[in-house]
Amino acid sequence: MNKTGQSFEELVKVVAILRKKCPWDREQTFASLKPFLIEEVYEAIEAIDHKDFDHLCEELGDMLLHIVMLSVFASQKRKFDINQVVKVITEKMIRRHPHVFGKAKAKNKEEVWRRWEKIKREEKRSTVYGTGKGMLDSIPKSLPALSRADKIQKKAARVGFDWDDVAGAWEKVDEERAEIAELLRKSGKAVSDKQKSRKKMIREEIGDLLFSVVNVARKLEIDPEDALQQANKKFIRRFSGIEDDLSARQMTVSEMDSLWKQVKASEKMV
Image 1: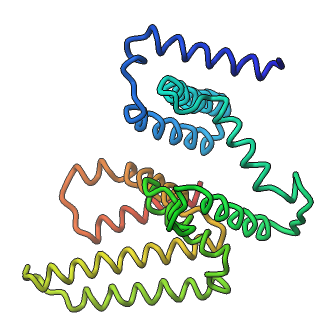
Image 2: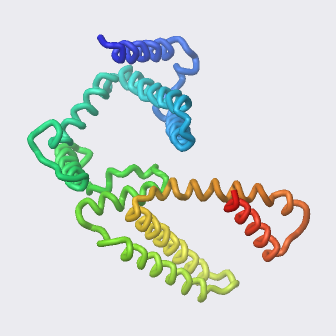
Image 3: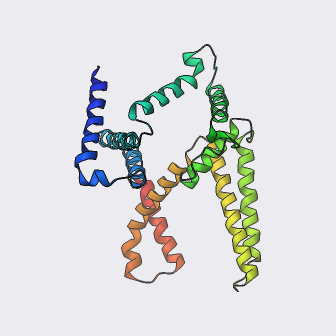
């Protein structure tokens, strides 16, 4: 057994021992590990964003730990074990890359993706999970909304359902923005059944607008989730620069805007 195999085998043994002897590990279930699994993924993403490779190494280890733990749980219930997990993903990668492991040809990544989706659909049709389901049904509903929208659009684009260029996607943003503006223009201040109905319509249109913005980001090869996270960080950074002034006294919108522009200008000077 090579060094990688020995290290992995040792981890599996450690997790199995913890499952038997540690009170906390004994109490864990598939469901109880869900929030920890999500947390580890986001911590790994943060390490990537910060280019902190020591931290990334640690977080990838934490992710691997959860994969092994869930596999140990499944093994105890006689569902599957870690060997099957490795076997399934290895076979899947070989099967879905016939241009690498077989005789098929692929000139570009678009051809790779089209073949990937075709093979995936064939796989799904041969299982109970694929019965009556379309290609978009496999996208996890628990994904962050922006990431899910991006993935939905990418999958649809792989079978040709897409704008020819970013200009078409941007026109759709303008169209959705105009529809919201018209609804807002018609909205009054009184709360009524009609107003509640209009609010529902506005919510739907804002959803369409966000979906359209994701489309533009996708066409420009920009990750919308990452772009919004960067915008969040920028806002927090700039807000911290005026927070003391805001707390000191009541300001008008004009005064707050002036302060904000000063902070923004100071960043550009650095």
